[in-house]
Structures are given as C-alpha cells and as structure tokens.
Image (cartoon, rainbow, N blue to C red):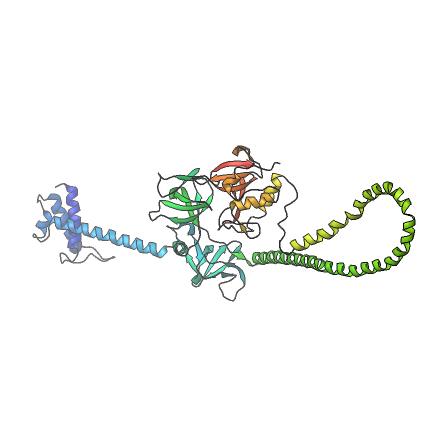
Length: 501
C-alpha cells in the first residue's frame, strides 16, 4: 500500500477512534492542553501505518472489530449526509429569502401584482384606510410592487404612487395564475418577420394568412402542450400560430388617477350635454314642421269664405257691366287675335311660382319626424378627406356583424359602404363584391382613401380603408370595434381606388 493511502486511513482511523464507535475519549475541547495522553495514539497509528506491512492495518489495530472497508463506507455515508444537509439548508435559505413577486412561469408579473378584488380598489397616499385616495385600479389591473408590508403594499401604476391593502393583491407567479383562472384577456405579439396562421394545430394544414412582426392579436386559447396559440385576426380569421414565435401577455389595465378620472368625467359630460342639446334642437325642428303642416289646412279653410264673399260682391258689378260688354263685343272680337298670344305668354308667370311654395314644406314635414339626419361628412372631396372622416369613428361605434349604421354599429363592409356613401359612392354590403368596383391599384402605390382587401384562405373576407402612413382604419371585430392597424397586419390581396386626391 502506498504511503498516501496509509495517511488517509490513519486519519480515518484516528477520527473513528475519537468517536463513540471505538469507545475512547472525545476529541479535545478547544483550549485543552495537549500531552501524551491525547496525542500519543495518533503518533502511534501514523508510525504503524508508515512502517507496517499489513494488508489491513485498521483490522490489526482494532483486533478485527473494524476493517478498512467499513471505515471507507462510514466516511462515504458521512460525506453524503453532510452534502444532503447542506442542500437542505440551502433550499431552506432560498425559500426564506424568495420574494413573493418572483415570477419564473409568468415572467410578465416579476416584481408586480394584480388586483384580485371583485371591483376596482382605491390607491391611498398612506398605509391607512382613512388617508387620501389618489387613484383607482380595476379588477385585474397591474402595478409595480415597491414594498410589501404587513397589511399594505406600496405600488406604482400609471401616474399613481400609493398603497393598496395586501388582501386585494396577488403577486408574481400567483398573479399570473389568478389571471389565467379568471379570464383576463391575453394578447400575442409576433416575434418573427412573417408568421403563418394555420387552419388547425398542424404545420401541414392550410395557411389562412400571414402576420407581420410587432403586431398584436387576441388570444383565444393555448394548446395543452403549449406548442400552439389560437389567435383572432379579424371577424373572418381565427387560426393557430406556433407559440415559439409569439410573446403572450395578459392585458392588464393601469391605474387611473383622481385627476385623470375627473377629466374623463368632464369630457363625458360635455359629450352628453352636446348630444342632449342636439336632440332637443331636432325635436323642436320636428315640432315646428308638424305645426306648420297642421296650420296649413286651417289657413286654407279661412281663406275660402273670404274668396266666396268677394265673388258674391263682384257678381252685381259683373251683371251691371254685362250690357256694356255686349255692346263692346264686336270690338273685342276684332282685338281677340292680338290679345290671345299675350295671354298665353303671361299665364305661366301667374301660376308656376305658387306650386313649390305649397309642396316643399309638406315634404320636409313628413320626413323630419321619422328619419334622423346622417352624420355630416367633412368639407372636401378627396381620398384624404374620406380617410380623415373614417378615422373620426375609431372607438366611437361598435362592431356588429351585418351592421350598416354609423350610429348603432357596422361590420367591415358595412363600415366602408357607409363611409363611401357620404361621398356619393354606392357600394354593396359585401367585401368580396366591393373588390369589383373602382380601379385596381398596386399595393406599392396606395393612396389615402383606397380600399384594401384581405383573404381568408378561401377568397376575400375583409376590407379596410387605407389612411396613409402604412395604416388602415377598419371595423375589426366585436372586441376592438373600429380601429387603426398597420396595412399589412394580415396579408392584403387587393387594392382598389374609387376616389382620387
């Protein structure tokens, strides 16, 4: 046996002999004086191992009660136990030091929290329920966590900095789990240059459209294995994309400060007052028209007796003048050929102006109470004017499948049909049919006011209005309503021009 191995065995043997295994005295306490009684055995063991020739010196020294193999086994077990204890201690330390806002699964919520209350919660200036309210955060709203206290958490969200009670918050991965279980809307952002939308969760299935990098889409679901994400592009497109090419995040609202809420309330009141005044004006105009229509027959009836009386008074004079007229008859007959042309020329001037005066108020009176005026198009007649007018409806009216009203709701082709109608163009209520109107133009030569059409795998299924700058305005779907998107947020297949610049 080599000397280094003997030294190792000697160390093991001395350690073992200093424990209860060998029944000898314990290792000297710190500060104890060393003499031959407590160091001599180590010297003897070392000397024996250095100079001995035994195959198992441990067995020789212990009279066979302990062997070298046993020493090695006990040493290995002790080392394993020490390592296990170290790992357990490290894990315990890690759990103790871990922050509630850690997010290993839902990384969107690292150092953040969401509101789990049934409705919106107040954000206060101090960790006190009686302190001033600086803003509110809706259910599912997100905030940055600055400090978690025993009962209150200091947060930041939007323009607000303040405190929310811990009972109303979920942190880190717990926040993500809560959002997952409570139906919070998710959006998928495309992380690759061009992403295919498949008809099914299969790379061999049909590609229904292409999505550009940076665009975001509503998420319907994620496959159980996490490989596919189901997204909604428009009212006519719903398909699957590979999850590795999108970043999916929950759509959590930010806080609204007291000042922001007051300004929003003020604007809402202004709009409501304006709408109410307009309604009153329309009602008053309709009432006046109806009153004029009702008064017209009465005026005609009052005028009729006066006409009859004038006719009766004129009859004696006519009778008195009759002999003179009879005497003058030969002269009138001679003058008649010259008078007839003059009478024919003057007759239209006497009768024609009276008809419009009686008919026009009647038409206005019958139409005003039953038909509300259409939204007035802005001044101008160019494609730019049309595009600006279309943009005025963003976020104003809802998306309704089959809808064709700029006041109650529209779908994609209903929106374009109504907008173009304001400029004198009549289009059918169908995207594919609209693509057959106007003049087809290149996608590289788009102008504001052009119509852009999008395929859905089986033909044209969606239409939008190009507004310039690489963007379109369109009636997208029931969640987003009228919105602005990049012109290639999905693959355009055709463009037409109806109105020029």
